[in-house]
Image 1: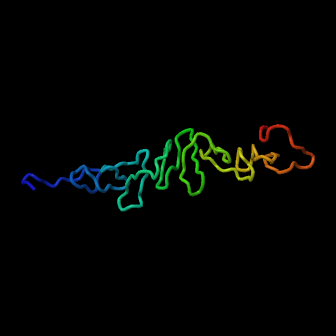
Image 2 (image 1 turned 90 degrees about the horizontal axis):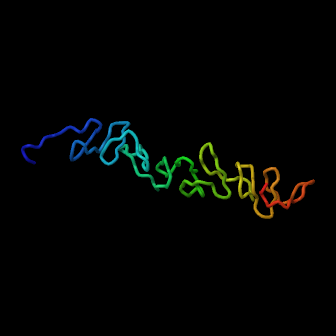
Image 3 (image 1 turned 60 degrees about the vertical axis):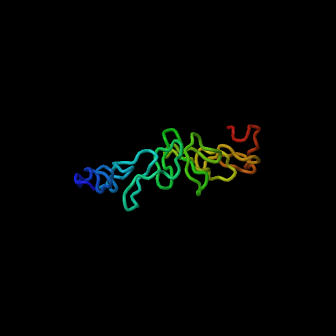
Amino acid sequence: MDSNSICQQCSSNCLECLLSSTSCTKCPLPLLLLNSKCNSQCPTGFFANTLSVVDTCDTCVSLVHNCSVCTAEGCSKCAEMYYLFQQSLSAPYTCILTCPTGFYSDNLFMKCLQCTQSNCLTCSSATQCTKCSSSFYIFQGYCLSVCPLSYAPSTVANGDL
């Protein structure tokens, strides 16, 4: 240490610093630490981790293409016109333009939700089937193995109503 070394106060939005007055190691609440700087919010691709000793902006678990908001678990909101989709409960969320077979587009929450009826390939809501598996007939939004009394199978392609 030379005779010109002094103690310099950390920058105004920095609670603790190291090596220089602008190299923050801890921020005052509600600011979040990212790359040695204190930020009011996390940028795209990061989430606010307030569960650690120091509140930080941490990288999303998996950077999902077209994800606009993420959490510690992954993507929680997609970019405009994209639907949040989870193939299974253990799979991470992805962002897709159209929902796959067996799922319908929930335009309110911009999510792909699973059709709940068995033998339903496509649906417009959880309980309104629009196309059934082969050997099944669509009747009033349901997939039936046989048509009800007073109805006969149609020659129209299954689900093409």
